[in-house]
Length: 292
Image (tube, rainbow, N blue to C red; front, side, top):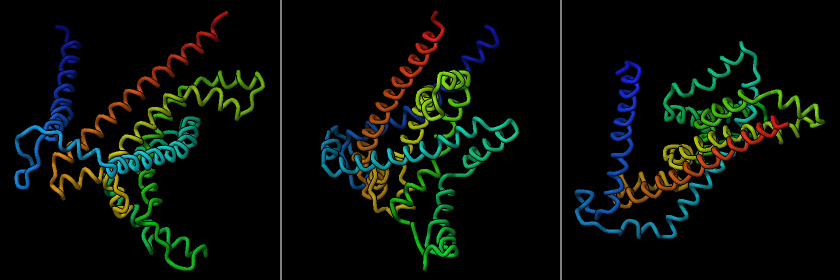
């Protein structure tokens, strides 16, 4: 067998083994636990039941799930509005400045997100960096604290997940054919119309990819709402953690986790369908431009 083919098979088997051990097996275990009976000492007891899923039908869980989706969607929108201009400037930066700008985006990945969340606390707390700055500028007459508010949660989500939005957008904008923008301007389109009719549609795959990379983690995060929101907002990530660690109701926590996993899988499928349609539309446009 050729060395290249052998190495490729070895890599595929390694990835498959990694997925089975760290992805499929834990989720399969949660799925099994979600159908078992709660036990006060051993966490679960034998005996298949749909009791956990029946309890999830309570309107309280629907409200928690909806609040989680709402906050994750708003955080995704904020990241998109903040990340697109930065990604555009990054893609249009000179060769010398671009590596440094990319390094600024990647550096946060080198630090644990939990530590970075504590750094945000130092900025937002009363008598923190932001409070002292506003007081020094004369904008406030006393200490101001944004900690334990929805605003603090949005700042935490945006700060933590913004790089996941910028990088796919940068990749999509960088490969954009500038000749198409020149052609649009030659046909009389202004900057805003060229952006709306050319740049935005052609970078839609990057927008979709970045939105999914931000929305999916935001939907399940529990430490940012707890540390920055003070646990005032019960999100689905907090709900699962509380059931597993505090209430010790493992079947209910596993059932909620399974529902969240299925919802995320459906969203990923929808994203793939939308991304494929965007690529097909882009290919159709290129064929139409090349047609006599």
